[in-house]
Image (cartoon, rainbow, N blue to C red):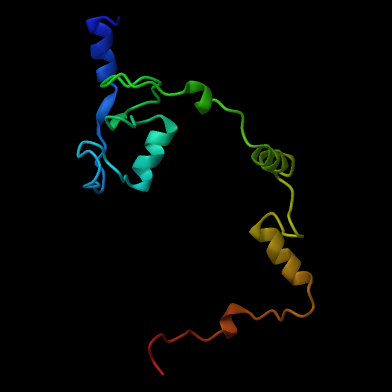
Length: 134
């Protein structure tokens, strides 16, 4: 059994309650049937209770309002192997040029100077553009 001080400390972690979009008239009126995507993600990720819809300031395995407990083993399941492979590829290629791209604007300008099909035009020869006038 939790002490009164523990209960008060846990209740301070509650920000408020999520508001469902609508209720199904055929179900119990106290059970919401639709949450916004953001609110659904909060419930899924452990930042809100799926029973009483209390929203927390941090991840909590047990709701301080109604006492509902999450399946912590489900929350700590191993990541998808494809996602791990993606993160590994990102880590291994960090800092490498992709597809012959240059690293900076200065290098890009130097590469343009070396190309023969780019005609250099001094800024003085360019006429000012008159926007809105024909």
